[in-house]
Image (tube, rainbow, N blue to C red; front, side, top):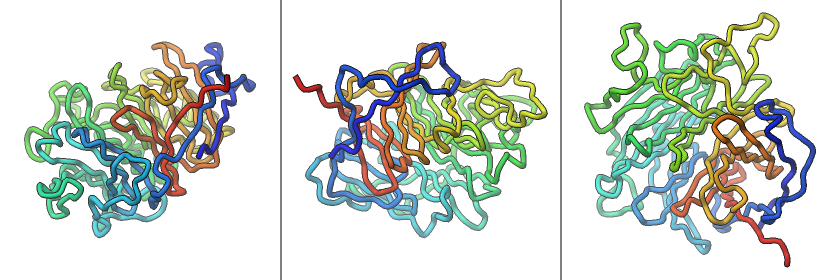
Length: 390
């Protein structure tokens, strides 16, 4: 059932990048955008990631934060989801930001059966990126004992763990998001320190040397300053969700803000995205000012008048919601608002497409490139568009 059919406002290019919203505009002629429940019988516990294996099976995998991955067929009449992997005994699931946070299937999953997870572990508290294998006798079951740890990063605090992992569509490398280490205000100055992996997006080759190799074109590969060669981009606070736009190759990231602004970025190799010198396009400490030279501002920001915790999504390329075509869809976890951003390479136009009551934790796309939203009420929603009445 649709839960909302609201198109609230449109932002013209004249206001691009300011994070201030215009007055409501009429509903677009294409029809009413809606969220429907495509799997009405299914419920999940704190779902945080939605992935497909790319093996032609059409299956959907949903990550539950406590340490479980569920699998089910993409059918509206599906009655239940099976447990694909249960590693609750290895996962530290405390507070709101720790747990099993990310899943990525190897580009050759159909033949090698490899998939990767990102989770928080205890004693000591750390982020773990690990590889697992599917059961060769049962494609809906992983082998819990097949874990190979790829990367471990110490976490000084229990928040800002980031947690997204994704394979690059053009290079086959694994991209890993890491927050600044937590607390508030980056007290250890990790995000501006490229000698640490925290506050960065990493790019590693998991098909080369064990446990991983450094891609030769990484921005800090071979440097002599002590910078971590795994880093692809840095200066980020908590890039909870990232995604590649397949037609353009752009890497989109939503970076959760501190006190005042939420950010949308297009990530490029070697760029410094400014935290904790700037928050959004503004000095983080406005009373003292700041030097923004060499820092990459977001392509879009919004103030905490409109939300408090951004959830990154995808550029839409499906068929069910044509008004979203080519636009980056994202939401705010705290307010339930959902926006669509059009980017022409220089300016952003942003439209608030829905105002919901949902705590949206993540987005996903299926094999047909249709867009889904995951909410902490345990439900999965799909974007659709109803044609106007004749």
